[in-house]
Length: 489
Image 1 (tube, helix red, strand yellow):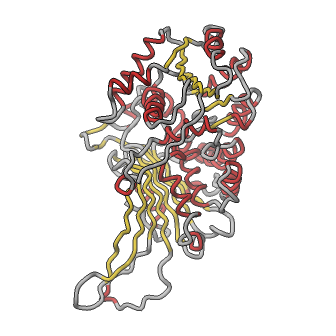
Image 2: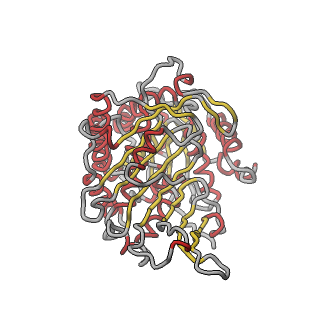
Image 3: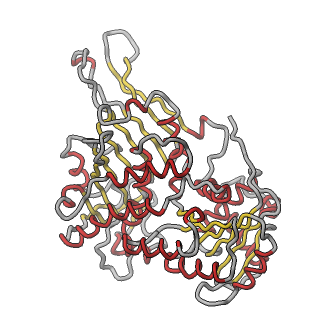
């Protein structure tokens, strides 16, 4: 089965931070793949913008090297890369001065009638200055959009300030707050599973679901993000955005349509219904952890403090939370969230565990009857798995056995699995905001996260050490097992 490719109208994509890590690893490869899939129409341009003094040819060479480094084997060909780099341009621009802005305006004036997208692949501290200079140099047209990366603030107050700053320049419908997790194929398939099938939605409530687990585990450590990460920690870096967005898609009511505002309205209701975790209950419902020296598949690894130059930090590299949603659909159903660095494996998944059958007609010789689970794997090996109980084949009585109906996207569909950025980058051009966060969503997420951060500070809740290469601190196991449940491994 192949996918349908729908071309988009011509556009100019201006990437601020065009020589940075995100552009090199994700944005340039994603745009290359969309070109090779036939989605670009002419004349489309990609314009890198940063402070460095490069020529157009220098930037094209940089892009070619990035593609050679980050494309998978067999994807890089000289001919395809030459086609892509021919549409690349570069402008040396300084967000804090007038340098380069006239040159950018002259370049963009060549395509006044095209869709124009500004991607801020830079730190949030200069979102405001860049936005203001875009306005001051009259670069905003009726077809302009702006894309901002996380973090949108480090708490509610800073998120409000940042949203106000950008909102003074751009209308809300022009602002695309990107969360790449929402572009993953499996995340979107969660919507299809729930709302395109008669099977699950009647069961998608507290009468039939026992609990939900959302895990986003990383096997890597700090890599080159020490400066940012030590100021953020796992709660700000992963829970406030990625994990709460996944929770919203699992828990939201059926929207009236797939229109962006209909979907985002329902997600907002979930965020507002989350029960507060604060100083009165944070020690009961949250666990903080920090990895110590241990081992990975590549050998021995250092602990978090050893990777920091200062060697002293109370920042959490792991967090587990028991969250509850105060509405009729989910009353009494816990949502267990966990995320961390230097864990046993790189895996992101959502596990829906259904309630046990009310009465077993089988005697003890049949074996244990496990609860049915729906496992939605986001990475790696994207797919969906449904566990069921069946009779073990063969004579000699009734013996029950758990099996899985397993659908791997890579095996089920004869197409390459696109990176999340590929969809999101072109959704910006299509003016489709369904998979992007609205201002009130971001602020509602911070209103739930802020009391947790304040509780940790007020109570001095310690970070629990865990050995690198394990599944986190023992306190996180206690968090779920005191409820008579266990983490899915």
